[in-house]
Image 1 (tube, one colour):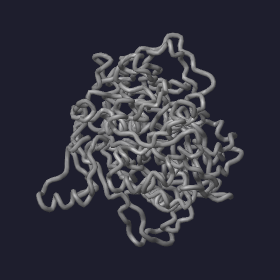
Image 2 (cartoon, one colour):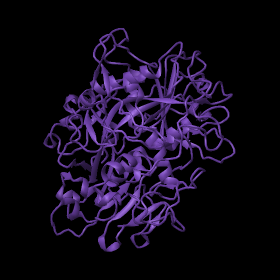
Image 3 (cartoon, one colour):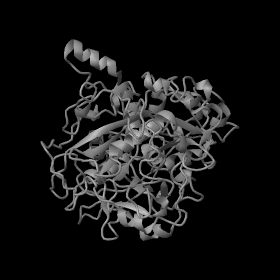
Image 4 (cartoon, one colour):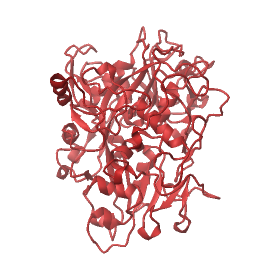
Length: 604
């Protein structure tokens, strides 16, 4: 299997921390400055402003809040490795603070997982990447970009808070934590696979968005003027651009979240909306997303008389969501010996001549007769138009979910990590079980795949609440995730430097993480917390923590790193796991007790 090919990175014995602001002892610098996956963006934001329901903390970062969407252009990350013409990385952002002027400031820029890893680990002369919040933010009202949190900054981000984020306008601040839904070792492998030269359109080991080791070709959206950058970085040893030492790091598991497979229901005449499939097998998914299947009947699983074809939407190869889905559903040993991929059957990377974006948004931009463009992606099934089907690409979770939910895209199908805010209000969609296993509830009949209906706020009236199957919210038990039967899921992690020191005043990264875990356990089940606080008071977890996720994925050697599952020695977790088989923690513990061995290198 291609995942076993090791990248050439060499582990550094002890990285030298080049980032001067690892901990923050003064209110002139933010205590927490995060970058990375959208999978924890909402829960972190709720915890920042609403506190920890288990420890009793009323807030963690403060009661004031401002946010902006990625399309606003108000916030972006700058890769500090000069002389390489690396594009800036825009994203949605939230900022929380306690007062004006502030004593505590926390901020989070949401980008792809692998992009977040690169921004955090890539080393320039002054350290890693920095956050830029433009001056226009000071006069731009908050956009309520975080589900269930109402922005309090209705006239713009206060100048005093903006000064903290930009060091009083003199320089931007460096990130001190990255959030990711795949491990850094898997992220490094995914970057290499996206960038290395491709032999032909059926090569599933390389995709050709390179050059490898440099600033590569941007992967374009099929729907909007957005893109994903393929840029070199290292997770150990020295930086490929600057030759500077990459600091050693550690990962903190936060929680497990399932990927939902869902479809558009608007064609109620002779399409998916008429037949409402409830289940998809992993083999069917592998055939659909590799371009082998493209008919509505092939998803429904019976002859319906429909002549409709599927519109298959996928993510980009530098997305954590893409790679989790790829290695657990598509590029697996039981999918034709690992010979398939979501990039199968087109490329290497031909672009659409004279390509213009479609209007309105989420309308496929290229006419069916023009199918064949790989970047932006708009291709027929890999085996030719005879098999029907159409494949396009959305950049980012919001864009993919919006594309599948759009009334312009009947019979479309996609995938995304679960989130109440992500799927809330997407009334043109239904999700399916995978191999008969329901991702959210104890059984599918509880909700029949309908999207959640939740509204209100945690920091303002009306109060947060949900209706239907999501009321009470405790109905979302993730029973089939925690018992290991739901196939496609990943653990979200925080990446911090090994030399990270909590700030002298204000919250640490670990404090905000526990707040998000406790919020997920009590209020907003966007993920299954790895651990949560059993009980506490006065903002402290006095009762210790309880394991929330009893299942792990087997780790394997990759990107020059030997595996450690993190069960026997949690602080030493290492290696890849996005393709790992699921086991119970107790199985690893007792296997080690009896044999002295670990459950390594078991893969899908």
